[in-house]
Length: 253
Image 1 (tube, one colour):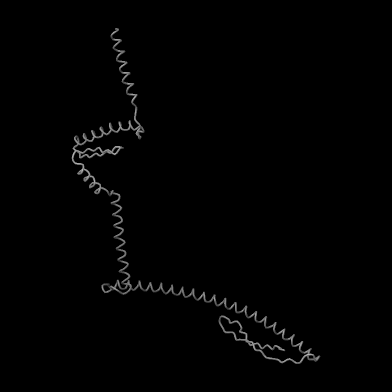
Image 2 (image 1 turned 30 degrees about the vertical axis):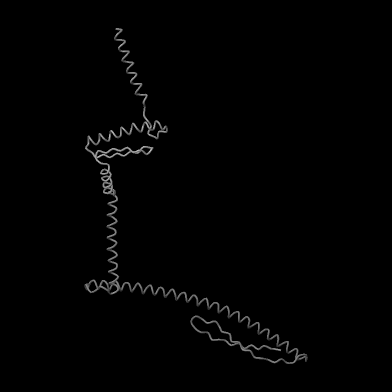
């Protein structure tokens, strides 16, 4: 009984020891190792494992493998089961052949179709323009010539309408300017009438003063000069207004 108990105790302790060693390792965080010595050791171990896996892959799967590794110090480590030059050339060729994605290919095809369509439209427009100018019409049928004639007539009607619209706008603008000038002329005529009336009143006063002076014998009769003023009446829009002539006599002494 004692021997069995010792055997069970030894097995239990052994199992506990394995379990403790497994839990103690844990997982390594995938980030840069700060300690340079630890980083170098880790690099050596994982580099050897990577080279081993590459060699196994080449042998087991009959694959062409090329592996290039540079350490942090700039040292080169490489592996290839054929030739590194041939592997690199094959890689560059495969990259050139598969550099354009299927989506890019489909997009290129769409733009190519669009370019062909635009070139065709440009050709049709140029041909239509030449036909409208009377060129390259020898091969047209009677129906096509009739259609071309209808297009020209439609274009001429549109041009005439636009021309009439422009001329009408210009006429309206001229009428507006004429109205402004007529209004200014009317205002000027009113101002001239007021000035003429004031001059006539002044002349009457001067005549009255001259008559009083003659009666008292203090002043000699003054000579009278005739001054003629021609004042244009404002013209109306539809007829020419006759010019009024006003004769003003001013006494000068």
